[in-house]
Length: 109
Image 1 (cartoon, helix red, strand yellow):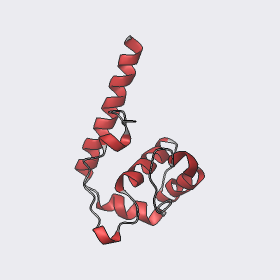
Image 2 (cartoon, rainbow, N blue to C red):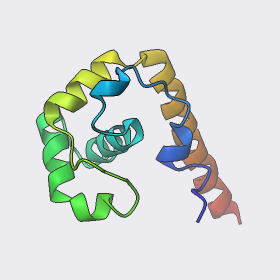
Image 3 (cartoon, rainbow, N blue to C red):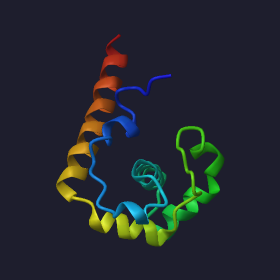
Image 4 (cartoon, rainbow, N blue to C red):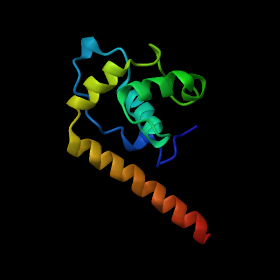
């Protein structure tokens, strides 16, 4: 099944991974998706994001690969410290805009 055009995975696909290839245990889009879902659910720090992921692991596995399990809070922190803020913002705004369009369109239809 194709991912909807407003999915996290599709909207963040162009985000450049700043990590060294040999050091990657977790997929970039898995980390980003977990962080976004956790923050939307009320997480306020990296430890809460990690806890959110452990608590909802079965649900996350329905749409994420998670080949090496849940990333640690240190992994979230290191990755987000290295991401390009401008590139992340572009992806995030595209994702939010797609959801706004879908919600407006569904209400008009």
